[in-house]
Image (tube, rainbow, N blue to C red):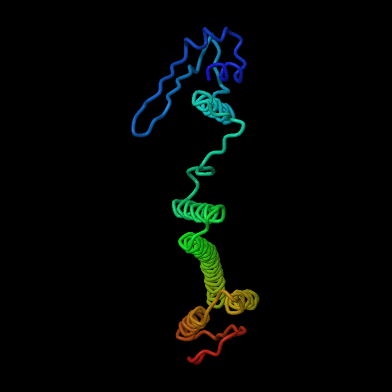
Length: 245
């Protein structure tokens, strides 16, 4: 491993001298692991390339090959029992893959058996059934994730659409109070466009449309109480609401 670091970092000094500056030990505990300490500065130079990801990857590869060689295992033909189990993999997905692999192995062992007995046939059917059940669960899991993403997109749309609608409604009300005819026309049209964006969207339900009605009704009622002449914004509706507008 020291040779690997010496080569990857292109250190000019003698490898033996560099090796004496490093520290390595192995802990044989409940979770066996290896500690390798490499100096940041050696022979007056800072080893900046220590931070490169491929250096750590090559060290891990070298360590694994050394272990396999120590156990008299040819690393060129060795197939790990477990792969792709990084920290990004969820526990649920790992359990699913593990169970699926066990089911496949069980089915394969039954098929390769030379003497197929009644018990073996039943075991094969059970393994195949379990495999199908796991595949169904995988589909359900994917569907659930898709549903969550759709609900999130719907919520994001509704929140932004209502914020825009509320801002336009406030501008329209202020232009009426300021008696600015041109601004009233422009802002009322903007309110109608923002309202249509909500009520015509397939992400909005009847309660959202009713809220649009109520917000406009409240502002119109307040303006009329102040003695102001108001032309209520109009917009299209996808639903027939029970309440009158």
